[in-house]
Image 1 (cartoon, rainbow, N blue to C red):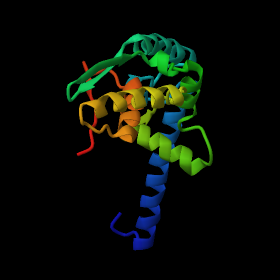
Image 2: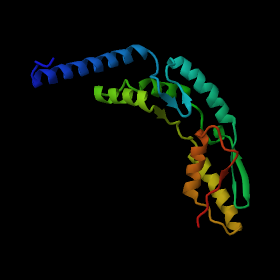
Image 3: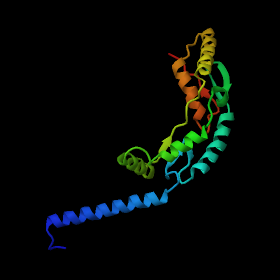
Image 4: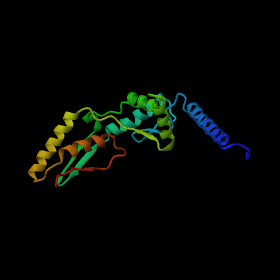
Length: 184
């Protein structure tokens, strides 16, 4: 090896690296063939290595529990106010979420797919739950809380409260209660 020129060494090293890279890509394709890539989560649910049908089943089971568990807000002498996510128009949407999980590493151009696969193996990819569909219901509830707070001389941060309610719908496990945000 000492007799080889610098150019030959560079070419051999590049060839070896390309070979290792090709092997990793082929191994990844084999391991994840027909399955959701390892490292993919829907919300807090690890669906990596599952078939889309298995993921749908798990998402449906956990999502049903999430949709039926109350979200409670209180603070500043107000509350508790409680809703279940299904009242706010949230459901797990198992088919859409499973489909999104399955598309990780399989969409768009080759570089994006490769980037998704590397991210799956290194730090994982989290797919967010969909937002609740009944935005008007959430706004109306926040307005009612804000009106009650004004009677006590408090000002609710309505935008933040709406955001926190939407976020709490997919928060799991849920906190016993969430604080009502007030403006200073």
